[in-house]
Image 1 (cartoon, helix red, strand yellow):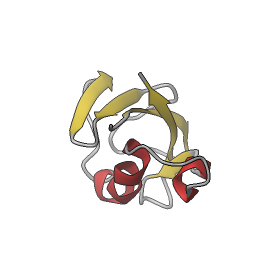
Image 2 (cartoon, helix red, strand yellow):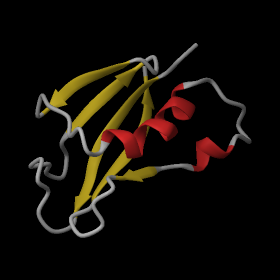
Image 3 (cartoon, helix red, strand yellow):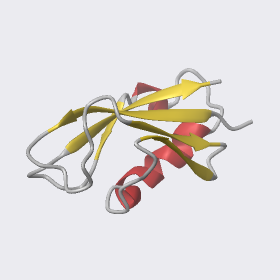
Image 4 (tube, one colour):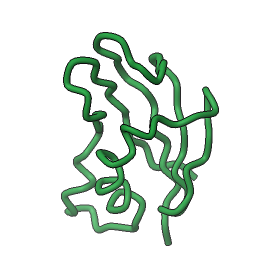
Length: 90
């Protein structure tokens, strides 16, 4: 069974080229689909930084799995970093 993951923008340092603001969010369904949230778009530059973690975070894991300690992920822009909070929903 794969989880639905909600990624919510927790902070934006500098100027996010994609226009993300705190509170913006989107979903990953079953480890396969990016589902628009608010706003209904996703930054293509953040995707390669997030995917390795999201594939692990979407799967069912024992409580001791390392991925369960991951609470946030960051986009790769170190000057204008967007921090995404992770949450399993549904």
